[in-house]
Image 1 (cartoon, rainbow, N blue to C red):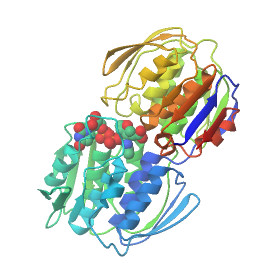
Image 2: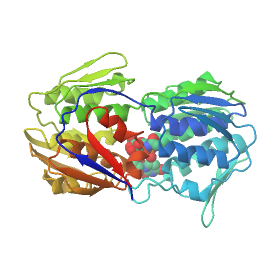
Image 3: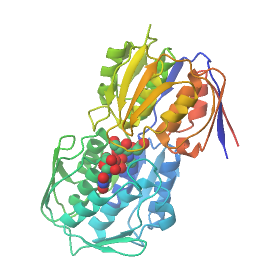
Image 4: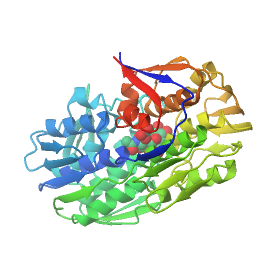
Length: 419
Ligand code: EPZ
């Protein structure tokens, strides 16, 4: 099993460029199916989740031509409306292919999505199924597949019982080709949703309100192909900012959107981490002393759950106690057990809340990465710990962070991959 081996305590500094956003690209790729005309995507991150997504769309009959961070998708001849079971099992975001298949062909067959281990059970999809039926689809439960079909999707009004990012993106895509108007209420407001809506409007869709809780979609008969550049990954940028704060060093983060990180930066002001921003760079400077500050994860523009685990590592270096309240997922705080093994002083109050007491000197340990964001958090912990940290199951890191080891080495980190 490949591992990362980290020699902690090295001084880090320098400049790091942010890659294209995983959670934007994982929707733009399926959205190409809404049109019979080709789509060119640039600034795609070279990560496992994108490889899986392109394998899935290729298995549907799309011609995929990928060179470096650019991909050309020819969606004219789709050969099936059924998602490949094996591939869909490797990627939670495989569910993003259902809406465009249903919108274009009035039918889709797919297994329960696999891949990501966080969240209640195997990540429920009840909202997706309820939303597609609200748009007029009939759901047939087969032994290993969900089977959706409709005469034609009809615009509707749908109120999300839970704010769901991919749920919002799915119903938005389905509504683009539905007959009539769709109003989505209690919609998620993530920047990736705004990017998806802007792209679809550029190719002929009629969407207003993306980025607000109410999104209105006027159905159209068709949309065209075109090209799109994937937006910078705000979670990767925030992760590097937290690394800089935890290592108490100056790091310049380029190719990013600081305006997508207002919740993190407002916390940095409270905990004494100095920073400067331009429209596309974020410079973090060493804090004299990191102060504790409680966070509660929340849908955008609140504190992102995907930055909760890196922030928890940062709070082990703060002088005092802080409460981390993870409101979105049931299992996202379980990784704190590994920080405790590294010497952190963390009390688990309940599955959604921990108290972190700091500062503590972390010590290197042998760890296993349970999920993507916990995995990168262990790298951050290993970089600031004394001694050697070994992390295995690094697929869970590589699937979301391109070339992470070599990019961190460019900042002076002593991190290498062994097979
Ligand atoms: C997206 O997941 C992101 N993934 C997640 O990033 C991110 O953590 C999450 O949004 C929240 O910001 C992608 O965009 C590919 P949700 P998503 O639907 O849309 C419950 C990462 O590390 N729910 O907003 O799947 C669900 O269990 C990943 O990059 C239902 O109950 O999350 C959760 O508790 C992790 N029924 C809550 O809603 C449903 O049908 C929010 O989930 C759907 C969701």
